[in-house]
Amino acid sequence: MHRLPSTQSVYRFRLAAVLLCVKCLSFPIALGALVLFLINENYAIARFGVSLMALALLVALLQWLLAARTSCPLCKTSVLAKKHCMTHRHARTFLGSYRLRVAIAIILRNSFHCPYCHEPTAMEVRERKRS
Image (cartoon, rainbow, N blue to C red):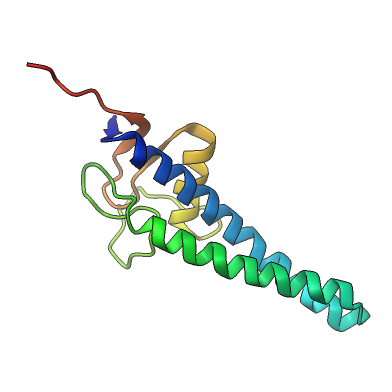
């Protein structure tokens, strides 16, 4: 099992994973609130939907910036950024997304399998050899 090179990269992976999950939840909730506004014409729901959409856009921007620097220690491919690379044949999805599966694995199991090389990585800092 591979490990990450520094504590900053561990924090970057965790924060990008949380932001990806928040982004995936906030967009459908905001759209649902805006549809509910069209049905009920309640302006409080509309303000909630618009503010949640603005927050979701901000979270998406932050996640995009952080995810670009979350690379697999073996293949050096960004695992939480949107890439159009060929995935490993054993890579699995969650709700149709490889990135969402990696993010949930980081949050819940504290490790993940890279969808591109399918190697396991622990969310720990590797030890340096002293000589």
